[in-house]
Amino acid sequence: MRLVLPPWLFWLDALFFVGLTAHFLWHLRWVHRLPLLDQLPALKTGTEPSVSVILAARDEAQRIERTVRGLLGQRNVRLQIVVSNDRSTDATGAILDRLVQEDSRVEVIHITELPPEWLGKCHACYRAARQATGDWLLFTDADCWLDPDAIHRALRVAERDGAQHVTLVPGVMPESLAAAGWHIGFTFFAANWISGVNRDQPRAHLGAGAFNLMRTELYHRAGGHEKLRLSVVDDVKLGLLLHRAGGRTRGFLGGRDAECHWGTTLRQGIRLMEKNFFAIADYQTGLVVGAVALIWTLWSVAFLGVLSGGVPGFLAFASMMLLVLPAWVVCRRLGWSTSAVWVAPFIIPVTHYALLRSMVLTLRRGGVRWRDTFYPLALLRSGNVR
Image (tube, rainbow, N blue to C red):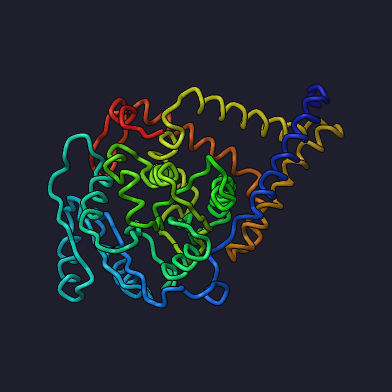
């Protein structure tokens, strides 16, 4: 049985996908990996900049030592590493105390209580930033590993471009084609933000928890984590505060320069964004429902086009498959197998499922559970930075 839908609906759908593909390809012109050392001018000062690296760790005994030792291996920078041990119940604190004894560049703050109206991670970052002494601050995650020259290269980019903030969208090594497609889809959305800051667009801002490097003076002028005490997506919101404070941002794909051990499977990626996606949408229920309904409708029409048996329906589906072109660009720049590009056209509805799931779970639970602490939705909304 042939499916009967008006031909104009398929033509409209095809036009949308052609425009979406062109949109992604256009933005990807400004989306690249962090330049290599031989592509960057030397620092004019000729001295190693001082950088305070800040980590907020809770129950990270399995990987905190690898993370800290990797940071200690950063080249051509004067380092201070400040780790906030945020109410850990495992051996995280003992491991950090041992590392402090081994290397004077490591400092640890043991946090045993969470003050009222603070998120645990935000409070941990706030405490560590108060102890930082470097000219630059780098906020990164305990499950993120950096290339040995990543900080130095980012500092060179900052000096070259007159920027006070450099951020890298985290890279991963996905364990399946579906997971690779998930991260390609995530990169599609991030491309808009990266393109915007790299073109100095007036309203563009960007921040990523894996690698948020900024001038210390700018961080404090922007209000720091004290303004973000109830921000679930503190990395993104920090980028917003830095922008409002007059900071200039440069953004890049993390790739293997800032690689995180999360979301290596499709299921992990969806669960990872459980607390984040609704917060990124500023807890706006109408916005989420509208976005999901629109995307699922557009993709459904494309899939139904194959069943229609007509030329317009076929063109609608073929136009959706054009998304393999920006996916191919992303794979090439990340050094991934291009076999993942065939999954990309089907992954955007999945990301919107994750968005809807994030909203439904947050509303059903009445808030967010993060680091073994429950935060009511009314409290999160009252402290949300917009």
